[in-house]
Image (cartoon, rainbow, N blue to C red; front, side, top):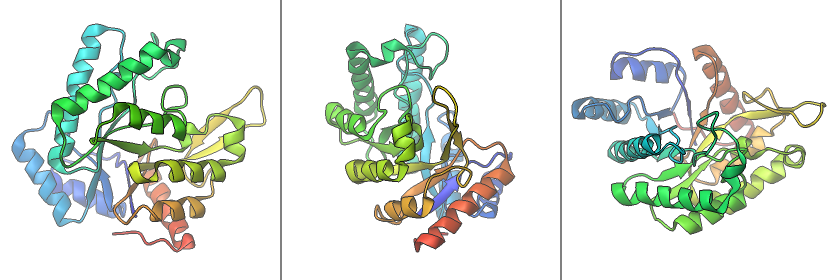
Length: 280
């Protein structure tokens, strides 16, 4: 298993980037560049990552490829394709995005249209188009699960894999985003085990967060950093370990460099409790 996360400190070149990643004791990293980078810059960061034994686990898209604004949707689709091509060039484990939304208020917002048959068909077509245009050979396009849009369960993700029907499509697992109801919260270990059982062969990257539910009406489930919630991380990391040594586990959504250090150290300590080896 490899542990990584955000850096939240500026760097000017590959050497500074590697120094920060190593200081955080990362063995997996998010892509330090995007598709606007030139060929030489890409080669320099690839070489630096290889020489430092840093696995580039994810290239992010984070654009709404299902926007109801046609001009915006087309621009976001082209960006997703360019990011997937970058991920393929870098040899990243995956390129990740959310499926998209028809919300009028937020690019990743919830709305009734996100549950329509037409929306789902459009989502499948958009993923196929991105993969078919790029034809990745060294990476996969993936969708991060979300609480209020497909795929919001392991069953929904498995259905999406079957409906997309492309070898270049795989799973980015964010089990916390799918803990979106009290039963999944109260039975979190069982639910996460089910995620790994159903999606394990397709998983190429994982987000590590935690959850805390308030005793309040109606239902308030909060994302928090690993160790500040109720998830059983030794059991979770034992599940990760079964996927092989090159699976990256990324802590995320943290405010600063030192908090990333703390979160990564916690995950590392829980791996030690579980008897799971961590590379790097």
